[in-house]
Amino acid sequence: MDLLEYTQQLIKSGNNSQTKNAYKLQELIQVNSSVKPNKDENNSKYTPLIISGVMAIVAGSVLVGYLLGKKKVSKI
Image (tube, rainbow, N blue to C red; front, side, top):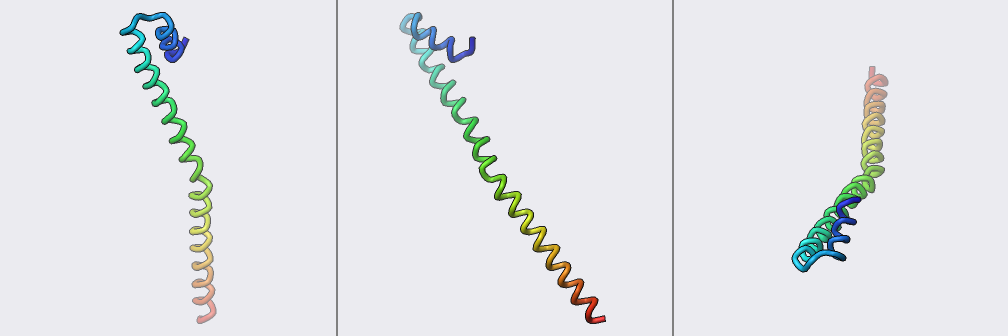
């Protein structure tokens, strides 16, 4: 049994103070569990943009290096 199920059982069968504490605990569990997937989702959302940006910079650097090297060879 996980913690969320346990708090739900306390809410159903507990006295007034246990019920209040169980509601608080359940709220904390739900808030903390909903924050974690959003972080992973945001990171994976930008991964293709980062990879394509790095590839564009590398391709541009190779092109500039090729053109500068070609220019030096033709002057000699």
